[in-house]
Image (cartoon, rainbow, N blue to C red):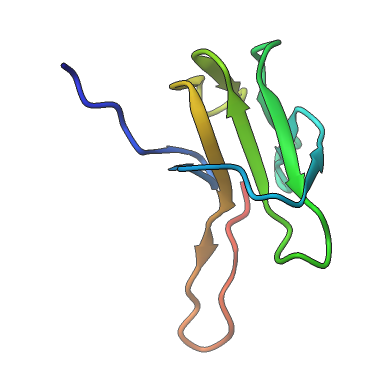
Length: 107
């Protein structure tokens, strides 16, 4: 049996498979992030997949993709990635600046 990936990367976003969806979430937009430089969108293209946002007050601004089937995440520059069924945490990657604080990666 082929082992499925537990992480995928698309530009400035990292998708990490998690065991379960946190309890305090609400339905979110299928647009996961808009590129600050190009304006291109990272978005969920599969109709059956759902995006859930962690409710403010329960932690950071986190998004999760709940995929009942293989789910496509599209972006004009980075190409499409496919997530296996499951729950995926969406993490905006950060850059380390040795002379200042870390910052979000600009896409």
